[in-house]
Amino acid sequence: MCHEAKYSRKDGLLTSQPVLTGLPKHRRCVIIAGSPEFLAQETAEGDFIIACDAGYGHALAAGIIPNLAMGDFDSFKGTVHPPTRVIRFDSVKDDSDTMLA
Image (cartoon, rainbow, N blue to C red; front, side):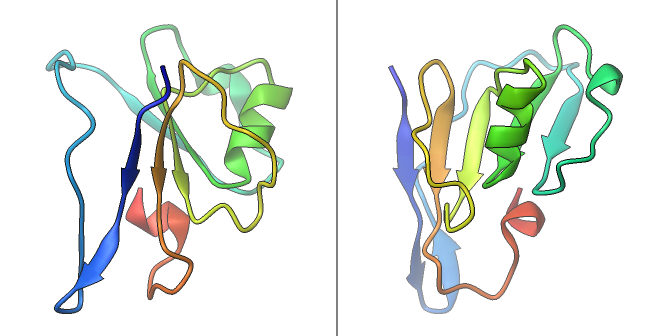
């Protein structure tokens, strides 16, 4: 099942409910941003993969199933499929999707 958290602005801060629990203590995190040129060969089994917006499509094209997709999804127009979890941001924000990751 795909889990989605909604972020909202409250008193100028982004707030949400946590969606990531039970992760191992020692695990590498790889963030795939919107550039179609990334080093897919640098990812390894066991990495926690975060795809930011259009990075989700780039990850899938490289044969990578992200653990988490996050962003306002103004660049990626498709559907995020399970088992990838989703955090969706409001498009009105001061930081980029990658910065929020």
